[in-house]
Image 1 (cartoon, rainbow, N blue to C red):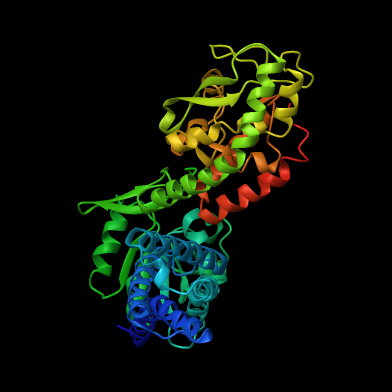
Image 2: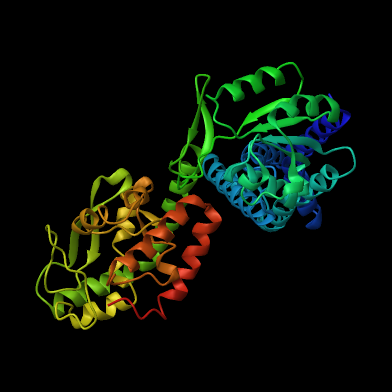
Length: 465
């Protein structure tokens, strides 16, 4: 195996070692520095706190870093490290309250420690990844690759490798039996030979990795695999799934049987726990702040119009199951049948108070209770009435994919202008496009960004009526 392979392996080992010790080292050292800043003696309780905090940060902060791909953006790394530190702080405070030892520690020391540790933990993974990327592109560390077969997926792979040298890969060319005129947008100089030329090129050029973008059932593919098995090169299969609209696509295995997820929820396992924990924590704070406002709204509705204060409507939730969504009643009617007419501009069914509530989305506040029930999330695709779901699922391909996640009080579509009435199919299609884009790119950072933008949109939108 070429020396570059071993060098890359050593660099990965070095990166893993540094990432493993960075979080606990920063956590413990900032506690020591904070104590010395206030001339507080490092007694046994502080030593125990440093050890516990280091263990928690090793588990939570480092886990967040490792779960991210080797070449994710620095912003994503920093944000998730910061959120993980907030989880560590919350656990420490909970432990301190439960064991009644919080009074042992200086409040000033803890305050400075919590604040100073966060930016350091956020900067550390970004700095380490940047160091690794610079080392990866150094001479002798790039792994040479060859691509067998030319199609949309293999061309995209080659483009990524050429544009991102930090991946540590060097493209040696494509191998295909078809003529140059049949290879689409591939530059002629990138065609290195035919499939029969590939085994010799692997031996002569010391190619480290071969990506095969050919139908695996073809005799020529099987013959090529047999030839490559005579060498020590690594072989990967690129399935051609370019015809599929991918949602959270990833590879996995079921007891050794390889599978590829083409459409899946982003909230499997740990991400789902983080999403739910964030919902409960933020919804608790929002509900406490909103209770006085909700009480005044309830009284105002009761005094200004007849009927119930809360309007309940059936909608589709996670996995397309029916849920009941709560809203403050803003109309003189409570439609929840096979035919539900959307509110329009100057709709006579909307009460004067209801028009004001809808203008600023205050009628949605009871849905914080839906979040506690687990029926909804703070951020996600907005739930539609059952009648509307049954109408649009037949008209828009992929419409029901939005139900791979729990519906939200606000969402990516809403902060991008898709609020209120959908007058035609094109407007609903635009809303669904945003919903699916949210599923593809979900992160806690995206959720927080949407929540912040929601606060701004509420006061300038003219489409809520």
